Amino acid sequence: MALPGCWDGPLFDWFLDRFAMLDWTIPAGHFAPGLPPRDMRPRTLLRFLLEDADYAQRDEIWAAVITGARRPGTAEAYRILSIGLAARGLRGSRKRVPVAHRDEAEDVDHDLVLGFLRRLETIDVGVTNLGLRLIDSGVTHAKSRQRSRLRPTASELDPAGSDVPEDDIATMFNAVLTELATAGRPLAEQDVKLLTLTGFDGLSIKDAAQRLGIGVQAAYKRHQRAHARIREHLAARDQEPATAVRDARASVAAEGSSTRRTVPIPDRPRSTRRSTPRARTATPDHDQPAAHPESGPTTRAPGHPSDRQR
Image (cartoon, rainbow, N blue to C red; front, side, top):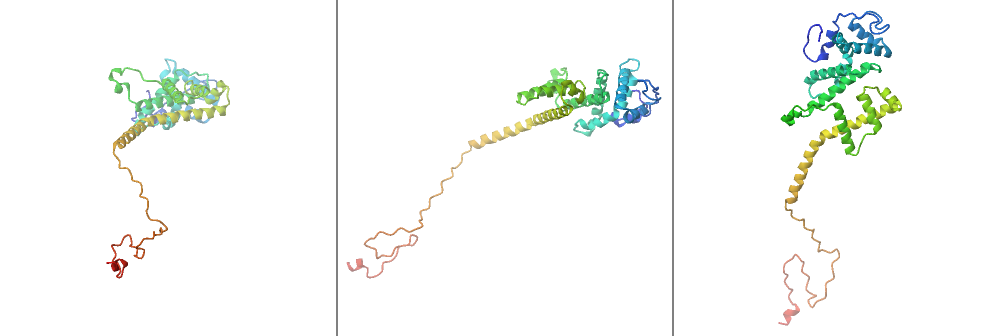
């Protein structure tokens, strides 16, 4: 990129400093009548765009920058200008892209810019919120690339199929919709249209609500609920391998325990003692004292009738 100097590290750690050194002059009224209101350098235009311009003026400036980026003679300069105008928003969007390590910030910045520039070539300059739409496109692309890094590539799974193209985000979105429908929790058709208009066509929620004929607040709520359901589904899907391992271990343990022989627990013996002693049955030896169950044999007293009979 034709920027003064050079800097190592993630792009947005140094881009704005280099961008501020550009000494181009953008004549007054170059983009549209009264825009810019006076001759400006790129850093001054950035300040005007962020602090002084209203929404309509921002869209006019962005439409002119996008148009210049599509012309062969001015493409390089206007692409640098467009990235400079969106740099703060793109840098702030880093936190929206989950990373496993801080070292991945450089890759994330690259993906943010790549998604931004791709959308720069196709976006309709007649829509509103052009700058925000371009930034959101960069974030969407960066998230998609980050998810693909966390999954094994085609070459890792099958070296012979290494030339298979990667799934784009539309294919991933359709796959998630299919999974939700298969699980018996499909998204409503209105929610799918809303996500498509905002995520792929680049419309704001307000414009998408008008297109679908629903209220803006209702569109915001439907959008949030749909995103929440997709996030919950993806989180649950990511946990499935660990759950499967735990279930397999539990089934093996249960099968092993069922093969072990166990000693049945005997019933507790019923007590033979009674609370009320049963009356003794009269016998010829009723004068003989009763022996205690736990005592030994007793000696008969002298003068017993049996002794006299001898």
